[in-house]
Image (tube, rainbow, N blue to C red; front, side):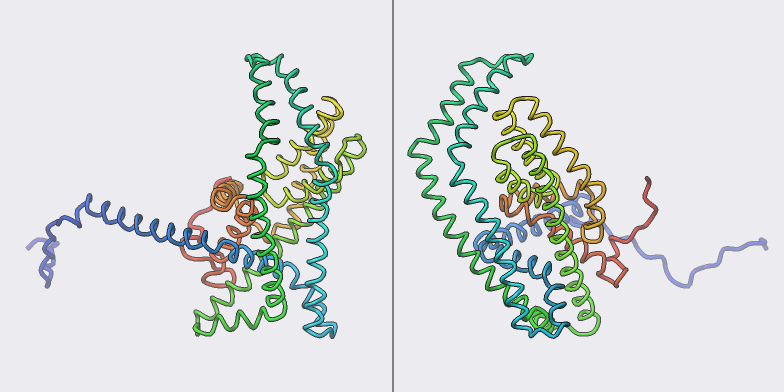
Length: 375
């Protein structure tokens, strides 16, 4: 007898299944492709529905962000014995006053200095015309003159007037959304926890605990993001505004307001605001002042990016720069400026939800780290 014998299995070997039209390699690819198409169709349907109720959705999202940002202040007043209704009204009036001040500054800047801006744009084109003559590639004077005439003609044409009339409709939608946002914000500040508990009524057990974690994480991320971004934007606006005033650049206050608003758009916002300030300095004060303004913008952005932003936003925004850029691009394509402002906090909330999906410090299984990252 051989020293080693193969043990016979008591069960018969499984008969391999014959590949069919949908089980072979090409069939599996086709099945996955159909699934992807279905998912894309659902996403397109959701985006279409969102576009139809964009005013309501944007108002609710802004109210949610503002309520998450100011909820610690409301809770602090409640702990000090202030009645819930009074604390809600105090917080709401504070937000309305701050937003009203920002809007008033913008309107004041446009109304009082619009002529200066138009003249500066015209002078800027003339100045750039002189600078562009020294470039290695050729841009003729006729091309620049045609470009300048087209801009001037558009500003004085009936098309611009029609655009202004369209702007009236947009302003109507804006104020409608603003009123709706204030109303929704009032109820979020007053009854936010009750509203969330009402929405959690269908959940029980583990599902309820998960929904509670998701809600708490959403409020924490949105509140931390808005407060941190507002603080960073204020520092940028004050620093760059003081620098513009010292250099003697006109429109320093409106430009500071532009810097504050653009700071809510990550990555590109500060760059665009700095470019606008440098262009105004180039037109009004010359190339030396423009270079100084660029240096001021770079210095302020480096200080807040390396020292202030990591401290204020480390806990609320843990996204890679590439993810931020992609979210920013997608938000801009879908909803314009509002989408650019809301895209990054929404992406941060989505990642925050994934990070607490299976526990306080236990992310969803696909997001769990399988191996150490290479530095």
